[in-house]
Image 1 (cartoon, one colour):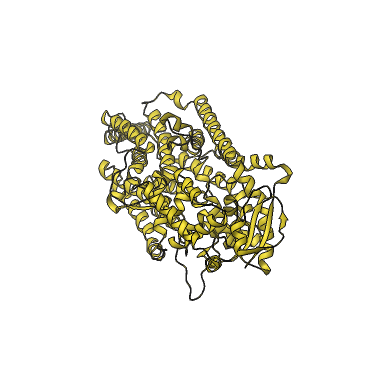
Image 2: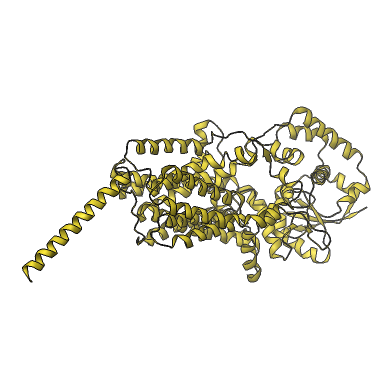
Amino acid sequence: MNPSIEKLLQSSNYLMSLFLQIRRLTLQTATGGVFQSVPMNEQLEIKWKWGCLVALAMVVLASYPQLRFLAARGGSWAGVYAYVDVDEVAYSAYVQSLIDGRSRKNDPYTGRDELDGKPLPESLFSVQFIPPYVAAIPARILGLSSSTVFIFLMPVMAATTALTLFWVLAITTHDSRVAATGVLVVLCLSTFVSGQGPSRILFGTPVQWNYLPFLRRYVPGMVYPLFLAIFGLAWRAITSRDGRYVARSVGAGLMIGLLVFSYFYLWTAAIAWVCCLAIACLVARPPALNRILGSVSIMLVVATSSLIPYLMLLSQRSDSTDQAQALALTRRPDLLRPSELLAFILLAILVRLIFVRRLSGKDPAVLFVISLLLLPLAVFNQQLITGRSLQPFHYEMFVTSYCLLMAAVIGCRILVRARSLPPWVLSHRALFWIAVLSFMYGINSASAISGATLNENLVRDNSLIVGRRLRELGRQDPGMVFTVHSQQGETLPTLAPEPLLWAFHMAVFPGTRESELKERFYHYLYYSGIPPDELRQLLASKSFAVLTTLFGPGREAAHLTANFRPVTPQEAEEEVRLYSEYIGAFDRQTAGRYLLSYLVVPVDAKFDATNIDRWYQRDEGERVGDFILYRLKLR
């Protein structure tokens, strides 16, 4: 090679090296003396074998309650799903009504459907229609019941959620092993962060087992992967080096739009988080501020466009919906929830590290974590702006505890890269034991909830044969059912189309006014042989079902509303008086107001049917499994 040319090449290489060092120092200065803690290389190689491994672990946890129930039942299992949340019976009843071909606005408990000229108001079930239809349409095509669908939903929801969360953590930490461990930490330990499960021992309160809240069927479980995917798409958008941030921002906005018609607490939390991200970026003003704000704007515009039809549907809701959902009008701040307190602590640590220049406040990864930590403050205090609070404890169960743990996992990776934490914190051995302990906590929760709900699930499974028989009888002789066992009444709409006299979840569906619900409950108490003195005792013992039915959920439990007012002795005594007067004036016309056709009594129950026999004729009864089914005819 010509010596002059060779010398020229050496000079150009030297200049290129010098240029790269100058650029490196410039970037270091622009980011506050530290490099970006998470690389921005989008060509990340995600090792999906780790994601599949933790997805399998979550499938085991999700299947545990059903498998344990099957083991307890043995060969006598009739086919009912093992429920882990009391509200799942209402969700499965609604899905079954859609499988049976009923309208979107229907009440599976009273048997009412929307007919021409007799429209029903909207309910949260009919407005949040995407998940139930996604479950019901394939089931109807395949000839499956909602019980069968709910059995398969658990492992499917667990696997898809785990894989989605693995992807989010993998692209934000750039470490597949950390991401895999993070999946178990986030999904298994959420109840600990939200102050449920064993963590209640620390506060001296009774332990309540919530299992894995994100798996509640069908919401939020069916759409939880969408909720998590929003964080991943938003991260890809704000760290994108090309024009693809527009498509990713649109995708995140569309997912929020789907959540609008899926579950209230997820879409409101998603919008709140996007706003938190925008606020964090406006304060820090990172180099890519314009692109980040552009992404945020696109997400918000696309997401909020779905609110117009949503608000139109919501404006047609029943008058009793707000009371049934314990909507409170308040502007009182809420700053002492467990996930909020932990978020404040982690925020203080990050701010301190930024102040001493161990981290950069302009780093997108740091801003991402800060936005997740700001979310609890936003969702628990949005009433300062809106003036409305709707059962905020749902945010703790389904949103803030998960987002807080996501922030902890990503933040831990940032701190190790910035050498603010020792490398052994994320060593293979440490990750292994963190994963094992998280999984064991999940197993402990699954075992506890399986034991706590075993008796209820046994009643529900024994009721399946009754539901099948009622479905057969209903083809020729449809009519209202009175069941002595309240738990059986809760689950019968999942098994048979006949309406019920009264059930606890009747209040959440459209078309049942407060006065009608109370009257149905009076009938239920009267036919059950409950005298006024016994009702007084039930009120004094703070019976959940009795207080909620007679006074509304906002008067029974303090965690449901920001304006909690306990029921006073005077109010309780007034209800006893009203009930006494009602049954004292009970006549044939009153009995015919809710005309009964069937009575279901457990074989071993000591049931006093005096009040029913006074107004109805019973046939000799038919033994159906562990129950006796009577046909009734008004005298």
